[in-house]
Length: 178
Image (cartoon, rainbow, N blue to C red):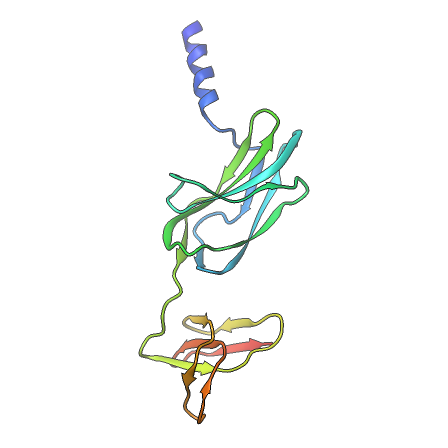
């Protein structure tokens, strides 16, 4: 009986404790694009005398971790994360509750990060100047990609234009609210 209890205690010490913090989003299964801003959100399940939060990213299903932000104030329960330039189908986020003794954490399931795709031969380019602080795209079908501005020779214009470019496949509808 004594050996059995020792084995349980050793096993319990090797595991990182879960359940005192819950990662709300991302949960896993999402598809993000390189450069996209994603709001990571978590909540306290069991309050402790904790010091701060650490937010980590894994591109390989949790085999390795890199810090997104460390020492986040205990009052903060969200973080706006810019998706890194790492294409993967095994991305994960981990939030760690730093305590004075044992740390607690929660980890998302795998999500996908996709590259920004280059323009294809069937694409229609609509260059122009966009103004305002936000642009909402409501897609009816297909995909849309925003690319940094570059010089283009555009049908209907007799000069090169410099500006943001929206990539649409033929037949797609999109609404821009500026």
